[in-house]
Image (cartoon, rainbow, N blue to C red; front, side, top):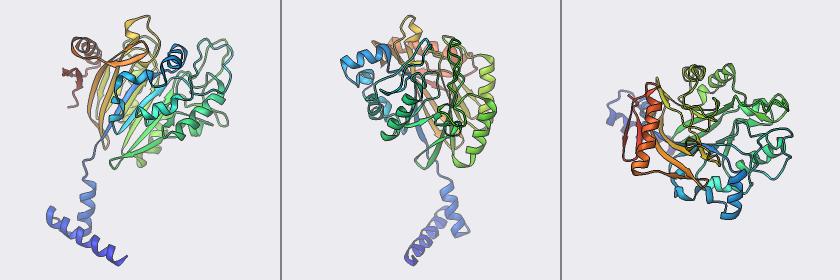
Length: 358
């Protein structure tokens, strides 16, 4: 113990000499606080591993949906996605719901192998096969070191933040869905309550409460929102107002899903709002925009997003593939147009769109 104390004293003395401080131990503390560590985060759109995607997985192998990405998603410190289908062989399809998804549970380790560290379950398909499938999905994700967020055995757990530490930075994740009410024929809510499984419902007051409670525990907060109107290329004015309120409430990054179509990215104060990342692994193909996607890469520092880029993606035969050349440029120009409508300045170079963060 004494040897450790002497070493600390010598170290603090050396640091004081280097930085020109006038006090030993406070000088050491100041050196720690001045760290400029950053964390890279990669985010994708909706990942749906059932229906026609599930059929081709059964024929082509579990890694089929991600085969063309060549490990791209694993390069970041943290990789995030919205898991649009429970992964389980348990439960029964929710009676009366027009569209229900349930993917093979063997896809959970594949998500881990692809680099996913955390996935949102706060969406309108998490309870398609009732609580049994959701329970198994949560269990399997945790067993494979993929953190689920936005769903749980009760409302308190569904709202609970996941905190991931990388490079000394604590990144907090919260997830909510405004699509928790199912088809009018069955009138069943997916929202968790005090004693039943479900998702965390999107409610502004609730989100602001959760942000406030999380503030002292993290350096950066990321909020996932399953929201918006399907197939619209622009967010509603009410969604923009909500997003601004969430950034003002303490979030640095908002990642949006559900419209099944790309929408713009907005720079707001020190934060960033990606209103919709579109589909990522999905079987919708009626319209081209259903297959257009993107990978959002950001660099996070304490209380801010310091860099943000977009990589263009096109889904072909249920596989997302990164675009290059003229095809990349065409899609990026479309995305840049969406961003421009949100007063966000962008530039395109080397098949990547960069958000102006100044």
